[in-house]
Image (cartoon, rainbow, N blue to C red):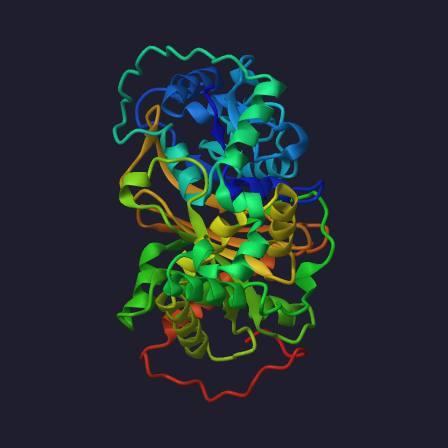
Length: 473
């Protein structure tokens, strides 16, 4: 049987999807027209995409549910795969409209879980490509790498080998059930139930005492420390909007360079924190500490091309109540350093591994708890992209903006992708519950300027705290 079973983490992204929470990751890329000759047509671009699918077999597989949900779903070949159902020509010449329309609709779970829209008639002469893939299929890093499969390091693409793909037979319900039961029975912890085993013998589930301590710390900073109530966590609609912000990557590097221990990720979190502070004040809200979920890549170098999710999560407070930008950066850096030193990314992975042995229903309950407003207020994700020039049929990649999905009752997420010497923020939001998200992009921009303007690492702003009724600092 040519199948691969979803991991517990992959499956969790299916469990938390709803009519208002579409769990797809995505991106919007902009390409310059070729220096020589005409721009490639939509038909030529779709043909080019089809010629590369042999490099990514998962893009021609769909989900098969196991009867009675005795185990996680599996990937099977789509024997009716049709590229035309996945690659579409955009109707609008405005890339922002293309993005919002594409991201406001869920993916069809009866076919392979990805789609692309090609905007070959943008008003500025560039070509736009908007893509999305379900989070159960890829995480942010894998999405960037899969998008790169369509690109080449040279202006002229190499010839593609002949596509010899042929769909394997789709297994029937009896075979899926038998395989699911067999996999469950081969799992010794599943026979007794993980909750009982954790109480009786936590070392059996988590391994060494250090692993248990890491797992406990991860739990303590996730659901063990409830996120504060916030305007960001009311009911949301299915509509989506992506606000865009572009900065030179050198700006972020310059801020980080003032302290050798500070990372680009710390700077991204501090910029998001400063932007959210201004956003709360704009809405007449008292700026409070917001709890952010921060995805962490766990892939080794030899796993770079693997699909699925190889991530864990850190949970850290964003000190939006702090008026001084340097103090905000230092507080975030200290918290992130503490989480990493305590092994919390690995601890979070251990928790997910333990949940893998639990009954399917319990896995879904845990998934929904981890995606609830109790666990976090917003996601802030840093997704490194390629640094070398890349081309799609002679068109050079210029900009890429990420889409970080919204769980239910989460109105906003902030993502960053870096390519070449550029840093590209995608501020993704529900425009019905937060209709004025565009200013947040401006506020993050101003927050970066503020961090850049601080001339010395030891500077402390002696200014008074800003009240909710005051204008943004």
